[in-house]
Image 1 (cartoon, rainbow, N blue to C red):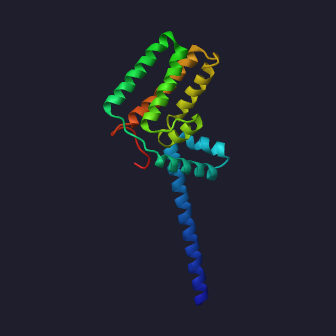
Image 2: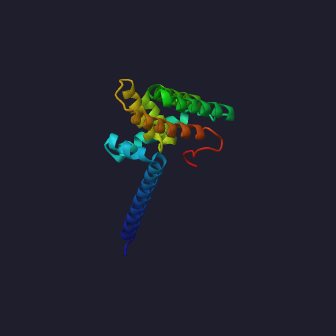
Length: 187
């Protein structure tokens, strides 16, 4: 075998090895995004029209999220929010429409207290998706009912469902705002 042939074989093997390593790296990166974002990954793929665009979008969300100054909540503040939530739930019995609106306001205040920007619903979804992807669909459903609630086009059962959905995100935000609560990205 000539030296030229040997060099060609070595170069071909090196190229194949680099391609395999690149594919493994991309696959592991995709798997991490799928794991970290949960159902939000599939939603982003559908909205962005493909995996590459969605993954670029999700990595952008992670970079923005990394720049946020999220705060843990002291026990006293967590207790105050839990008490407020109990009050909202109690008001639901007699005033379901206003209780749902109050639940939305309380969840937004909790986001703000934790350090999430609260300007604009779409941006809230993107910021929350990084650590709260598993409960984000609850927020979407609750918000949709709350929007229709303003027009008086919802049933009491839909309002009850909205409360359940708000509760899921509320609990997730409240629990992840403590030193021992909630899994952080990369842990």
